[in-house]
Length: 187
Image 1 (cartoon, rainbow, N blue to C red):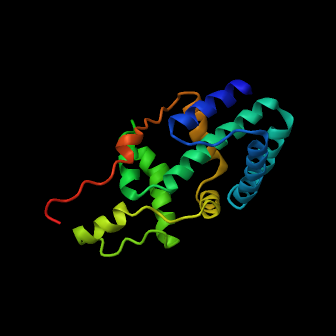
Image 2: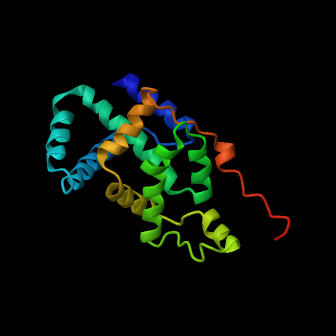
Image 3: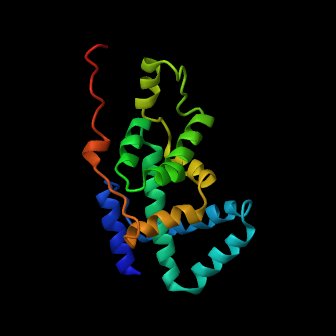
């Protein structure tokens, strides 16, 4: 359990995410995990009971929550990126198409349907750049809600698990992803 907690903390730091894994934060996430699982019930009712029982029965399942925390924090970071930053992030991934379809595409869809980023005049290059580089103005509460309706607990936990177990590394270059957009010479 503590080994996984230390790994999750190291991975969060490698993504420049400064979430303290204090007992209070862990309790908050366990509660959130239950709520998120309950929302999954609409999609897959058997999953809620399964996840609730797993957490109560086995201490190893606390690792599942730690993986959930890592996955959730990473998705939260992606929700707050501009589309240009998201593009830079997924361009670093080994399987770009899978990463884009699993995480980036649903996030951009959530941005659009919730009016967070409105791609107006998509066909016009200069207009497109404005929404593409726009950083989403979104509260932590809204991000939490959007993640819970956009992704299942399994999707969130599997992302964290694959990083902790190094099954599918997620390359991250903070300076490259967050570099300011170059000024256009002809603008």
